[in-house]
Image 1 (tube, one colour):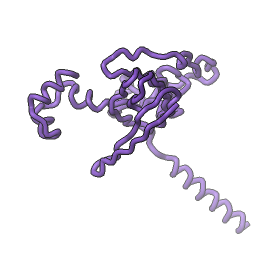
Image 2 (cartoon, rainbow, N blue to C red):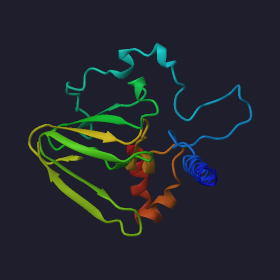
Image 3 (spheres, rainbow, N blue to C red):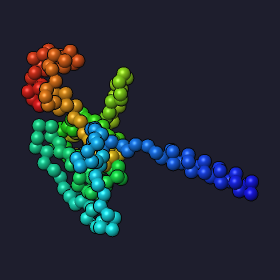
Length: 207
């Protein structure tokens, strides 16, 4: 009986440790989630779930990633993001798929995904891709990828990316810095970027 009691105690401690280890907060799926006491005015972190018995095949399906997109725009690229808003079955699964079409010499402007990591696969063309590490090192890692984000080839290119979140978010650096709403004080940006204030105002007028 003493041996059995010891096993039960050990099992109980193990179960407690497991339950404690799994008691963590959910990953954020939007920029912020302000706590409220009024349960009649709720925005959940993610999406409400359908009764599994009512799920259908269409909840897990999207057609059209094989079709090229229009890249006739100032940056020469088009991003098609397939996340939980497009495929409801991705809810809680932490996954997004992206197709990026590039015109010759097109660019996918420098950006971050605040709620997800990214992996990129080139399927057509030649792309110059890279990322910069966090401050203070700010190290640049780059690579030329063949069949992302800067098309150095003379032909169009296509890449697919996977993101580790059902809603990874996207912050395009230039848009956020020079096109915020309301605009950031030009004096602040002029000092931060070591630019003439008139240059900052011109850049803000472009975004």
